[in-house]
Length: 438
Ligand SMILES: Cc1cc2nc3c(=O)[nH]c(=O)nc-3n(C[C@H](O)[C@H](O)[C@H](O)COP(=O)(O)OP(=O)(O)OC[C@H]3O[C@@H](n4cnc5c(N)ncnc54)[C@H](O)[C@@H]3O)c2cc1C
Image (tube, rainbow, N blue to C red; front, side, top):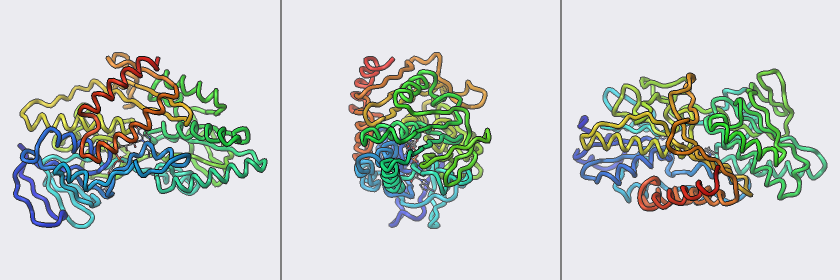
């Protein structure tokens, strides 16, 4: 058992007597909530005291905010944290984390409070860093921020008006280095194509995707590249690979080979850095915490974990954040029950869906870590889970269903990757993958 725990202020009210191991989770996103709810599903309040600290009062299912410029609203994507956590006897501290003292095992809050932990789960995620590319902050569309998606929808309508008045429009979608979830940019290009076709104005708009990657969605391997290439060809979406954006002006985007492209609308999700830096903990040059691959424990700090976007895993996805949360809950659970931690580095299988509004592309990709010299993942040649890709209308249901199920699970205080619902979902997924992918 690790050291005794105590909580400073907030939370308000009297300090509770110390009675169990205290796990403090920083962040109320995919990784933070899944870890907290998984631990609670395995250990009761008498054994484990859990506290979640978040600067935002609600969970947001970010992947499906991508629909907002085209259809729907985001009401069902948000979950208020306090009632969901209270339901499971998990403390909630609405505060911004500002400092960490691993020696004293305390977290400092921006409002002056401190929290002491036995185990710390750093799940504060990543943030966009548009300032890395001169001009991007002013001229690119920051679609990682749901608050800006409304104004993007208006810009799309203006673009359509210009196109209808005979002015051919050029949309450039740029994937810069340092963006760890490039799938969203590809998805936006594909959705935009369908949306413009439905408005019968696609012939007046050129869509081009320019990426620094050597192949399309490089990290997900050749099958994904081939499937995306085929979809782009069908839809007359142009693409350039191996081109790194260096700067943008109000009308042009410039690349490392000194070429420039004129645009009417620039879509560029910016490079990412850690949302919070933790001086003293080992981190890469973007502030992402260096972790043991199997358990996501921060290197040299077995009581601190960094699941999801906050850690150094090269691909940042919600699905991966949920898998990391499982690894963290397993490691803490092993300590609490006196078993050795399992730090096997066998890799991780990710899944994602690219919606095109009329069909979707599904990929199941077994990733191997630590085999490429530059720290990137590769598609595992030896994984038991097959590497599969498929495209079809049915896959759209999957994306919408996950966008409802994760918030519903969290609202009820349960993890997503556990229990009867998840067992059934896995069975359906296996059947779908066998029937609808290659
Ligand atoms: C537009 C878009 C589309 C995407 N599409 C997909 C997709 O299709 N599939 C997919 O798998 N992934 C997708 N992603 C990526 C996915 O959303 C992230 O990988 C996922 O959110 C990571 O989860 P996380 O818990 O690590 O971090 P987050 O979800 O970012 O959660 C971080 C938490 O930490 C809190 N926090 C941050 N700073 C502080 C602080 N100082 N103090 C206290 N709390 C703090 C935040 O409020 C938040 O609660 C997309 C992302 C975006 C933006």
